[in-house]
Length: 137
Length: 137
Length: 137
Image (tube, rainbow over all chains, first blue to last red; front, top):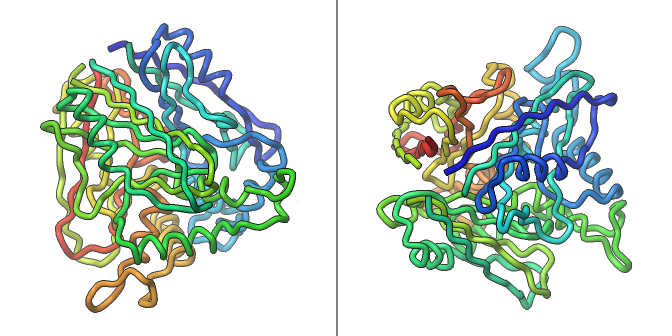
């Protein structure tokens, strides 16, 4: 079994941003030389998310509004920082998760129609790391 | 390491349906000859879900109602198709996810009491593909 | 590829409890001798959850309240047991999921700042099993 680990760092200008990282996943796969296996894409933070879905801009706006509706950012959570609580970002991370697996077959990522690997920055404006780990043959 | 990929296509009569695909996962495992490892079960669509839970019919009705409550299908999302938006199905996919891993030990799926692999069709009446990828020894 | 499976049993005093099981995951990794790979941590029950997040006590209270808000425990679900329905616990399991993957690199768990592996007992006071499966080289 071959194993290849890549890391990428994201530093968003906005507090919240959605970034299509499928090209980064593809690049890590190509570097690994692995033609059949899986890639684990995992945010190394408790207030960022990684998911697979459509990257259509209208849908990303819907997702953003939905995250805020189901897990609003407020300042009355018990988890607090000095000036503001980021508990909302933690709950949003739990809601859509921080990791996905993508299958590799014939040296291609097996993503269905409209499926893209999306990084959701939920508490940004600082460096955040993402692990891209390729395993297989 | 052995790797074996299977694909199944589902074409539901209803727009929404829950299907217990544990037998398909078991069959792919048996075909692979792998006795120790993992199976990745992943919907190749952004509007279908795969999860592990109890398949008791009352609970599936509860899950269906709960998905509709937390991520309702409406026509006022920003993500729209020509006639209706399926953004609700995308949000429901994010809520319960599109993939699970099942462990294999002694040539058996390691599912706990009541755990079944369930495919949730959220926007059906057309062919949808599911990947079942077995990896191990 | 080396594969090592560990199992732990949790029997909580309370109906609901959050337990940091990162030390158990680390111990299984050390026993396996695997220095590069992944660990699958998966609850073998449909009414328990495993997630990665911060274990700060205030945040765990926020998570508990949030789970109850989005997937309340009530007795009017269709899924019922003899005396009370535990459908709420099933829905909470769907919401935050029953499994995570943790990467291993240089014989260390690759968890980011504040990331811990947390077992959420949602319907306890009885023995529950968790699988910790280490795979790699």
